[in-house]
Image (cartoon, rainbow, N blue to C red; front, side, top):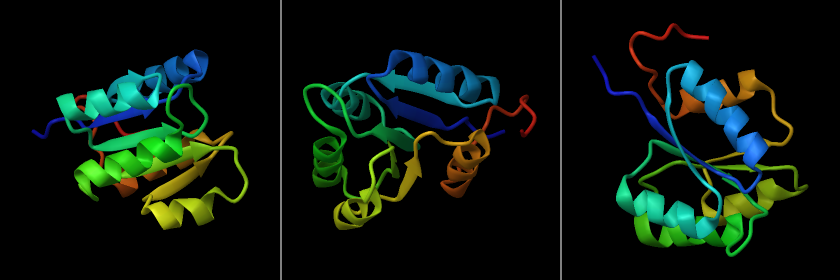
Length: 129
């Protein structure tokens, strides 16, 4: 048996965060949430997630600054997926060494494809979607 992956959702939109959390947990993933960039950094320091889903527009520290700090502290040891509606995010993401950009609004199949791409594992008793 393998341990389920730990997905860290970082977004200040509580409704979106809770919705995605419920969907991912129902699909068998272990999920943690942070509402700010600083909360995300603290969560990663506590336990390294398998992947970070990172929003760009947040209070206290935007997603770009958070991504830069994550790369400075941990290098490429954790995949960072930018989740944004911003145009031209791909260009900036490339400069920062971001692993993937998932556009908002996103299709659930696209989200599951991203998690699969980074080898995120579900709980063993939960069937694949």
